[in-house]
Image 1: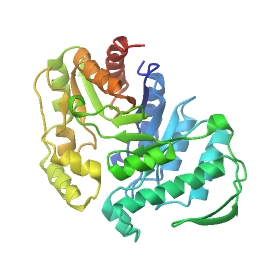
Image 2 (image 1 turned 45 degrees about the horizontal axis):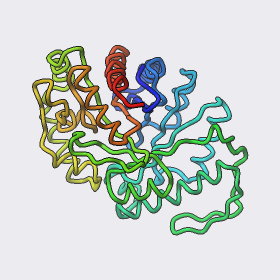
Image 3 (image 1 turned 60 degrees about the vertical axis):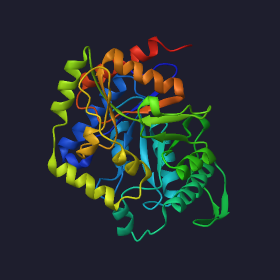
Image 4 (image 1 turned 135 degrees about the horizontal axis):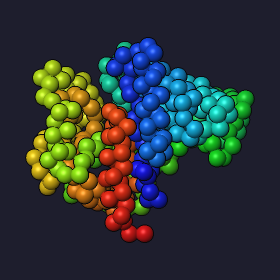
Length: 335
């Protein structure tokens, strides 16, 4: 099993860019069931202008699992806070399932411009704080009158607020100073794309998380073979990555793009940015033996990172390998 008493683990849902129709529905269902069987708390569902609606995908997740919580990416530019709160409450009441919200202030800059949203980077975090503030007050059953910089409502109330046990968990990017400040203001879990554990700082008692992929096998040689097969060189992807860097104002995107790639070849160097550089995924990877990757995870946990969002699992077997890594990390944790 992936989770232990000191960690919370989310997987990630397949993206609709892989293809729509019944095949996509089946893929979402099977990855959700794999994730639940592996002990994941929830599953991240992306959102941007090029993807299908994350709330309808969340509905698929809930219908095909018994306890897995959708972690729905929520962008203020797409949906009024009342509508978002009502979606959370509706799914909670229909299925008795708690959701998590991944509060997005950024995204692809061209997506926002297509919506005529020209709000500067740091101001988008201020807006997201107002947005989340309204959602949480509505879900708590308040009748809300509010006049803010970005939103104003009068005597607004949900038809069916949620009980305490179904109130959503909040996550937010903590890669930039503005994002970290917003997460702390909201009491949200700050999630970042990590540097190697040797370059990270202790989290000072704050709940924190990281977004990271993992490829691990009993020995390092096999793990690197699997990783390089899964993520071959892609010149088109490299060009797309460079273009994305030019049009993005994302702090994490810039941070990862500026770091030198470390395509290590042995058990001593698990941190790998090659999939990100080839635009195959948006997070760093840890590659190596169960013991070596487990040791690296343990260092992150000891620094205060308690939550992990994994990349999209290619198979149920891959989640079993990742579970072996978390077992190694958990076996050495101080209780």
